[in-house]
Length: 252
Image 1 (cartoon, rainbow, N blue to C red):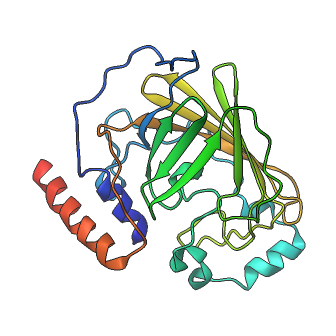
Image 2 (image 1 turned 60 degrees about the horizontal axis):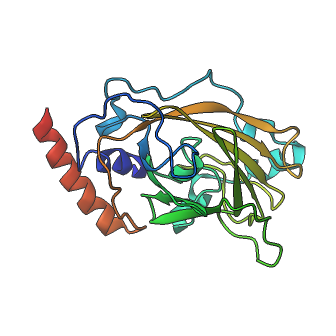
Image 3 (image 1 turned 90 degrees about the vertical axis):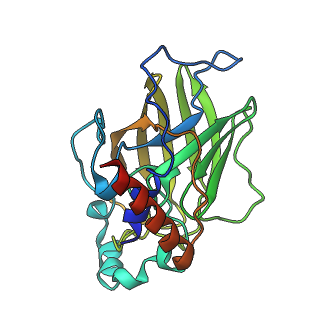
């Protein structure tokens, strides 16, 4: 299963755990979100000590809010129609974390004018300007949409629109088609130096009966400081899985 590869990859490089400290801040005084973030899972989804995959109780899924027309379309789709099988990214993320895409590890690089989210899986990225510029109105729709960000106190708010409808929200055969009216607002907040909370509000009036408020997610600062380079290639994925499995077996 493809998602297992990403849990395996997370164990390739390890560093000593970082002690809990006060929230780090950038030169401009805003919280510094930089670092590698994951859900705290290792091989086979086994959580490491302190892993907290959810900050809140489970809620409705995106597909559970479909209107009748969207339900009818979904009924005709099957696992093999999943766009990620054609190396297309998700619009939101397999684990309800957009910066993960179909993986389980991502790296944030923060600079004065941009926050960049690097996705380990499929070697993708999300570039978010933070200088107050509006959404671009002269670009075609894209897989990951057009993102703009701003600080609301110590919370980083990301507004995303202009999606193509050629992807699903999630992956692994979970039918979750969306329209080009998809609109996502995310809120990132450091709970402490090593815990990142993400909340999301999702609207898609063409397919949903109401907005989807995603259960809050808690990510942990990973015990390694650099993500892998994993493109959409069956050969490379298998090679990395074999190496990760060997190294993680040696830790037991």
